[in-house]
Image 1 (tube, helix red, strand yellow):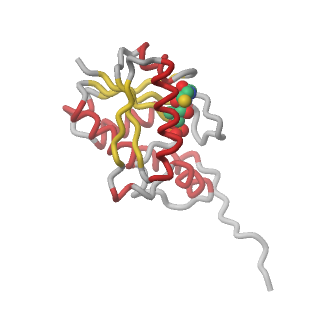
Image 2 (image 1 turned 90 degrees about the vertical axis):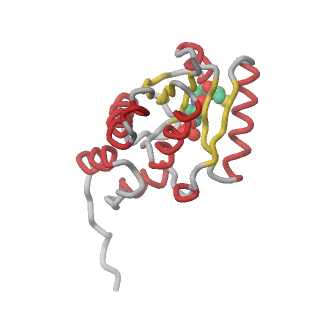
Image 3 (image 1 turned 60 degrees about the vertical axis):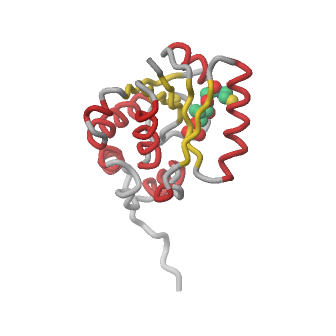
Length: 174
Ligand code: PNS
């Protein structure tokens, strides 16, 4: 059985990530979405919240025969250790643009140095999601902007429910 680990911060998961999960499930028997608990960036949602919301999104947005081959876990520490722990021989990552390439190449080399038996497989992000990034979604959500269309409904609902809505636009000028 082929198992792939798809690691990330997923803060929050976007339609771009979900598309990678769906496409990876066409190639691998099982896809383990691994949510990094302690990201260096200030997280919008706690690690286990992110994992809960991804489970909901996968079940709501992907066909049942795909969703049941996708598991969601959270991890702290090295990606390759999480891959070993979950029996994954492959790490999956998405590439949106050339700008992603350099850091992804470096990570893939590091991971292969640490665990030569684990290979990284890249999927090119679908064109319609190439502009999407969790950081920008996070910023829009923080300012109360509408992120539906960028993230699965489960995420948008969660963000709306927890948003500290402050619609003030600052002092009037002039
Ligand atoms: O979605 P992100 O934030 O770009 O994902 C980055 C992630 C989680 C894949 C990367 O930071 C990572 O693998 N972190 C775990 C620590 C680790 O293994 N570092 C060595 C890889 S070079």
